Image (cartoon, rainbow over the protein chains, first blue to last red):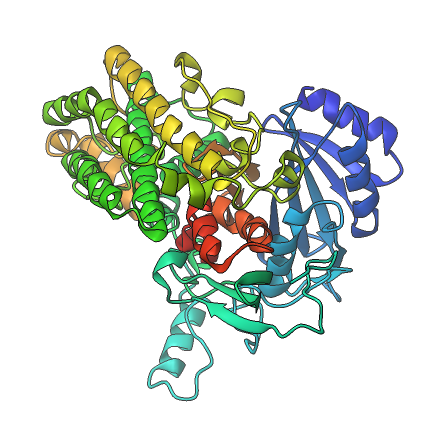
Length: 176
Length: 399
């Protein structure tokens, strides 16, 4: 199926559960809110025409610097092995208690990326069987890929140039 | 020694917890598996990663697009060109620029050489893990030739950063082209040598056949990709299914097996080396002339020899080197086929010269839960064979 046919089918069959659909640079993209995620995933996995049996990737994005509402987003990429087409689900997540339901009961491959969402963005993945930090140590404070997490300084017991460095960061944001 | 439905050993038996790694030569980096052992049998295997976390995704959010490319080399350090290409393809899709034919072919030659080099490292270490020591030195011998070729074309043996946004870093030299021709001429005989040592070797068959079996359904469900997926009977290769960078111009087969064990993955990878060599032969035969990168000086650096004679070129060079190029707002993901499977960068651009978010889809990262599933119920000695057959690279797992 082409991207147009995919978004058309999802729009017709799941009109109430999704926010909107678009074609972004040729890719089929569906926008939705967290409560609808398991239902939409179950539909696209089991529907005979769509047949999205392969979860490729989950990316977290923090839109803090772009002042976009809602602040967080989880982006899911799906492929179909037999039909050879793809779709991208973009789930907007609120800043207050960010949380998204798990889809690891549908795809085992969601296990690691969902733990990464929790580790790097502090998103609570509801219903995940083993929600622990994945890459950072268990006693780490903060969530490194949030935009308000500083890149250049870290909180250590002693640092001779911490004040200087944080001044530097304030006065000289990276040139854009 | 019975295993319950959920993979746990029965509690009335004495079990032992064994830490495999993180510094163990056969875990291929700093991977740690916590094994619950009953005698020699593995009950449960729990993965533990993060020992090689370098924060490359976070650092990318403060670097210009061209500065991210050398960091992508360090993700999957056995396949730097594949990572460069994946990042460049996503960026080029956002920019909407065309790539000349000659640079497409140079990219493909560079990537296929890297695929062969990566598979040679896999074969060498995988065989060494299982106990076949001779193959190790044979494979290193041929890999050395590819690294020399990398040095000739990019100045660096491993972290080449040769593929850039808009094309490649510089044109192919005559010596490099001669070297590639020489390599593809004698390489099939070398693969025969490895196969003579392993393919019908009874000890090799004992150690690999029926070990670490994964069915087609669970390979898809666990998100395996690349050779591990094709050895379980899924005929899916992005070079064939969604040709990028002009792979559609080439004729090659996608080797598949249905057994889904360590031996099937071995056969798939060895055959892939032969197919990569086929692609190289066709690419060298049809290598078109022309310029080796997009001539738009707003994206790719102008030629150095024109810097002293043209004011406009000097301005472009200065602007590009000091400010970089601005990428239109948007987000995209372009998957490619690396030696380990699907590689792709999800890039979010906010319209500036610095990416807003860079996320790598790493095949090794996605394969680890499935790999640990394969270990469960097998002997401790087979754990080493399973890890070797998935060919994980911790650089891209921990990022």
